[in-house]
Image (cartoon, rainbow, N blue to C red; front, side, top):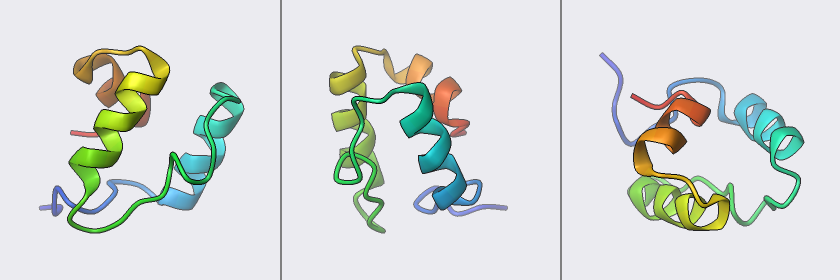
Length: 62
């Protein structure tokens, strides 16, 4: 069982993939802080213009 507040895959690898797929994303956009995952996801959702479900598919979140 994984903790929903921690990335499900290696976050460093995931950030690299996301930055290649979405060049507008910055390190600041992708900064993961325990306890603030939902806040980070909400900001990514707005910046990318994606729904919560679309974003979850993109990043592989459960």
